[in-house]
Image (cartoon, rainbow, N blue to C red):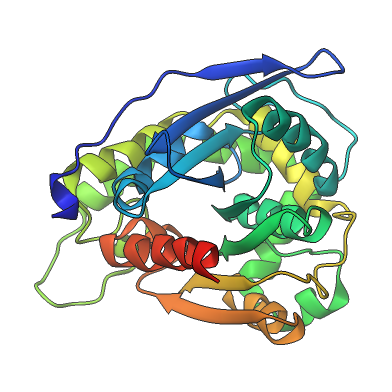
Length: 297
């Protein structure tokens, strides 16, 4: 059974890039498995990849979770568009001896999934953006966004330090809120949209809490700068298979539907709960099975 596969705490690996910066990553799944890159959410780090370890191992996937500039031990690199991260990945893949691969990531990691599939399409078998960040500079993205999303993205654009400060202390606040909220069996409660979703295994939930606890303001500021500036690639014409996964209550879902409609080989999938629902076992199973399927095409 999948749940019998124990989670792991792999060693941090790092390399020095050509420009002298450091790139950090961790590996999950099977060391000799099919190569897949995982991109964490904004303010997170490579620890987040551990959420998918069981499914990666079960699907014979070598899951390589990188920490982007400013996160973990990866050196910050201001002033570059999101598309430029592929330069770092080119060096990493050359070091690891990997030619073709698949990729997926959530939130800002979904944005990076789009960047990688767009700019490295000759090497990418397919990508799964999960709750991908909105390109708020795009009038179409703004036109389909909810009022709540508009408030959030305007804060990210004009008050990034406030957003970073709030996010850095969010894990403890959410833990308390979930613990103190009265619950009734079978009743919808908005607190279920915060932190690990109901139905998640305790050990996977702890990995998600650990990721949230590690949110770093400096790293998140770098991520907000990437997210709110021009991404540097055409996300409407990505020539590789794409499968968008979004929580039913996630604010990014409406524009992800647009992207699924616009791109030539793309599909859209919902999962339960909201932004953090990607860690639910059913969502993880479907996401990683989709990624594994790219290798069989």
